[in-house]
Amino acid sequence: MPVLVASDLDRTLIYSSAALALTMPDARAPRLLCVEVHEARPLSFMTETAAGLLADLGDAAVFVPTTTRTRKQYQRINLPGPPPRYAICANGGHLLVDGVTDADWHARVLARLADECAPLAEVREHLLRCADPVWVRKHRVAEDLFAYLVVERELLPEDWVKELAVWAEDRGWTVSLQGRKIYAVPKPLTKCAAVRELARRTGAESTLAAGDSLLDADLLLAADRGWRPGHGELADTGWTAPQVTALPERGVLAGERILREFLRTARCPELG
Image 1: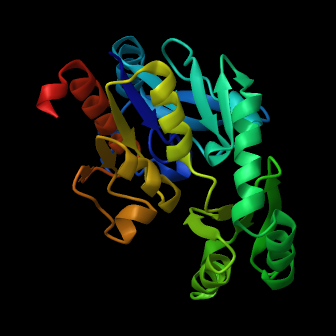
Image 2 (image 1 turned 180 degrees about the vertical axis):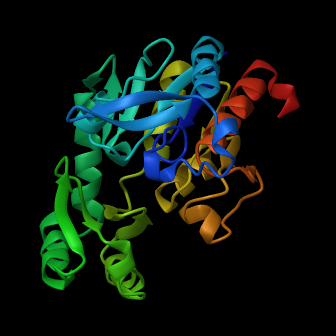
């Protein structure tokens, strides 16, 4: 029976130039592979060693990219190894099978959102009213499912995100700060629900997971084994769980370490 590996992408397996955390001397820096180009510019990277590990992982397990990115944002990533048959986008709102949205799954998600939380329009209106143009660079709605802001972190008031989180909690939404983005996401919109659906479809014997942000916590809790890097929202708050290993590595080297752990455990589950 297969092992299912569900991993967040940004700041978990792939890294922007600002997030690489190359703290070693230049001559000892790892060779990097560009895995995403946007508007003719290289955008995301992993180490060449990590790329080889990911290619091997595709042969050892069912690898499922599991991201908050929209489908369009996900599809511009060119990961090494065999193309994943399954992918989870929009924080679980879209389940892709061979690159195509599973319409039944999406309809189930929309029904849950309508029943269990405040509408997107209410949340977006609140963000537009309360976010200061002095530090907001972009307002965005993703896949008509959730909203996010792109901000100047150094200008962001210290308590603004906490206050937004309290407001959102009462309406069935959650808030996550990741780099320069502040996400407002409906609580029923989860990565773990989509991963459980894929585990059922594939008959997976076990599930491995990795992620760095608050939006990955449910994914890590649902997995048999999980890993989080030494950076990101979960590390900053000291979040952990019995089946989750908090790694010391930060930046792009954390992505390499996570892939080593995935591959080792997928090949020899008893070592996990």
